[in-house]
Amino acid sequence: MTVTPPATIEDFRNRLADVTDALPKRLRQCADYIAANTDRIAVSTVAELAAGADVPPSALMRFCQILGFSGFSEMQKLFRDAYAPGWPDYSTRLSNLKENGAGSPAALLAEFVEAGRLSLEQLAKSVDEAALSQAVAQLTDAGTLHVVGLRRAYPVASYLTYVFEKMQVPAMLHDGTGKLDHRHALRAGDACIAITFAPYSDETLALAQDAQTRGLPVIGITDRLTSPLARLSSTVLTVPEVDFGAFRSLSATLALSIALAVAVGSARG
Amino acid sequence: MTVTPPATIEDFRNRLADVTDALPKRLRQCADYIAANTDRIAVSTVAELAAGADVPPSALMRFCQILGFSGFSEMQKLFRDAYAPGWPDYSTRLSNLKENGAGSPAALLAEFVEAGRLSLEQLAKSVDEAALSQAVAQLTDAGTLHVVGLRRAYPVASYLTYVFEKMQVPAMLHDGTGKLDHRHALRAGDACIAITFAPYSDETLALAQDAQTRGLPVIGITDRLTSPLARLSSTVLTVPEVDFGAFRSLSATLALSIALAVAVGSARG
DNA sequence: CATATTTTGGAATTTTTATTCCATAGTCGG
DNA sequence: CCGACTATGGAATAAAAATTCCAAAATATG
Image (cartoon, rainbow over all chains, first blue to last red; front, side):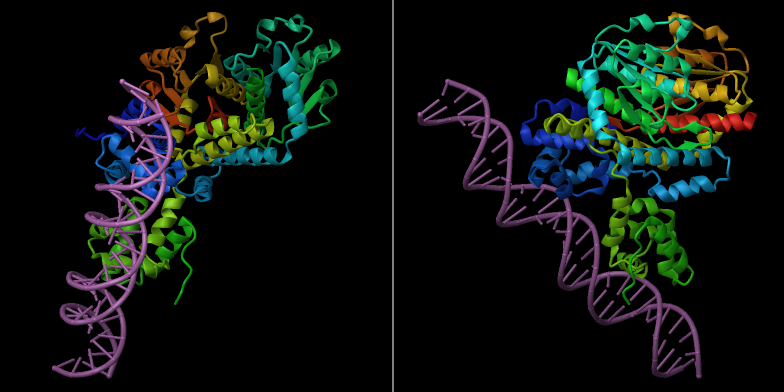
């Protein structure tokens, strides 16, 4: 029963995929954990990985053998040989990037990474959970979701629509292509998600207004509570996005939007 | 003579630089070898490193202690821990989330925030500065920039185009609206930016192919070096985006893209 | 429901690896 | 050239890790 052990990491992944389905409970746990934490193999001990997978060490040993290795050590060798760490330390790396001369692409990137991280941190701190839940509830009960966002908000609007589609939630992106006006697509029972940041886009506000007039719920995603979009919305979600230069990273806005979409998708599904 | 051990990799490098000069022959060999092979520490044994430095294991042990560690194991721990927990176990976390009472929207948001944060961190660690500079150079010298990205990459493509427009760089978004084919818009002297992630979009690859055939520079933004887009690109930028469930946060991809666009915009302006 | 088969957990064992210690070699100051 | 001190290599020991093995539990089979 000597099978040859996987010779490359790709081999390894294939073998893993092959066997996973036919495995009993504990060994399946091993497979799942290893699949998700492949890169830890090189720097961990049997005991550590076993603890992570929540199985006894012996189960992990058996698992290695099923994969075709003589034992854990042989498997680990494969990964140790291939080991090539990225830069180890985030803050060190970030200052290295910045040192490469102000205005260099790398320095710019460091700034945007920083801005994105800050935005995400603030979002986590400042999110209004009640408003978020309310938004999810309103969107869950609605028919078609109409998403509108232009200029810098357009990527967000398009991604939202993409996620809704993937989650089989009827959604329509109002993107103004061909200046076709789709405002009559708003029907009773629908809901609207409008996204705009200063300087606020008239078209976006107009659609929100329209939806409000027809009595549809409007979820507004915007930069502050005093935004003109706030008045038009039944629920307002504010996003504290940190700008760098004239451009926002959108990290926080996207995170909020996807969370919203996935929550709605699951609730409906 | 209990010195506190270095707490970060940066500490470690400083300490190493401090002591190196005052070291006798064998220990100096250790210092030199370790300095040149810092990244192997996490995955090697004392014996292996000692062999590499061409000293007996005991010399290496002494060396570790001079650096302030209690022994080799303590030093190794520093590097193993610093090796980014790679990519957390998101699929498991997602299913946990579903089990634990259908995950409140706020919990979902927390996950996406975390995914975004990790992605940005990974990006900072792993970005290829040379490739980035090369991409900027190629785009700076080009005429019109043709941006293509569909599905999940579409938000990135559209934002890139937005930023280029704002910076007065001629750019064209190939978004497939109306299935109009714009491949003949690619003219000599232009350049192409193609963005796609697994599962790769045929249309995006087709345009990249077209550009390559005409001899235009192609900047590929993708998830790994083995992506089919890599073959078609003159410069490849890989983005380590952490997926949460089926959806990527795009934080890292956007940060990279904006940095690229702003760098090109300034260089041209 | 009894029996055969598979899976499991953990204790016992073996192997590998880290660490200490000390006799010896080397170096420096006088 | 002699002693005092430092550095070195390797053998001995301790610690940690991997691996095996088997009784017990779980599961499948007739």
